Image (tube, rainbow, N blue to C red; front, side, top):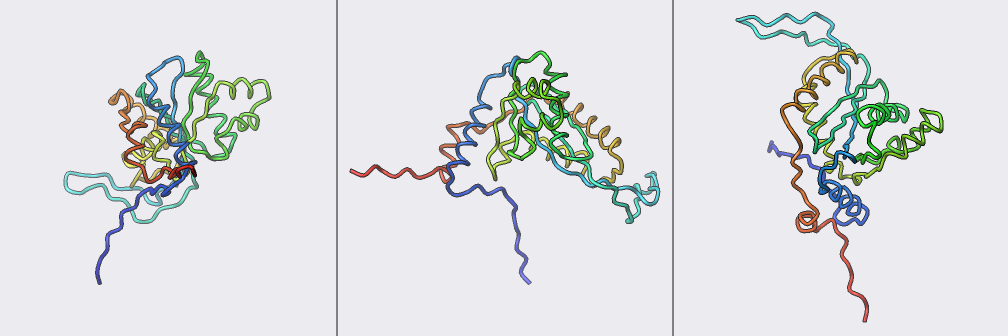
Length: 234
């Protein structure tokens, strides 16, 4: 039998005006110089399966590696919110039990009333999910507070099939590989502790994110996704 290798990749549409419009909008945001008064925040989220040990693992010794029993217990699913301010080199991970509009609103409210309390506006790059809207604040808070929070956010949505344009997705992927993958974590409190330690450590080691793809680069290297403009009829 011949073995065939498969490489999984995010393949953009061959031609799509909406894809291009959202892509260029996000790239334009990334090209702006750092402005502490109007920070650019990237946000992404993903579910994580909580897994409990059925039998206590045997600690590693000088002779044997740590031994873990093959049996385990599923303990539900938690939702991971990744928040990253690329040009400030700052990251935060928030663990919630669900991924509703209220969860999104409460996570964002904590930032707007905490880290960004003195900022007039925060630019948020995220995926275009039905929870990532200003309306979510009205699901969670009374109108006056909801309006005050929503009016300080400027959303910029990554295009469909273009989530790789969201820097927070890259950070989330790194966190998953370095902190969560191939580990059994059965409680949300422990998951929060472990991911918070990762975010703090990476933020200390890396000052910022060096995003390389520019608008001019996209127009050259990603020509296939741009609509073909037909010449006007004489």
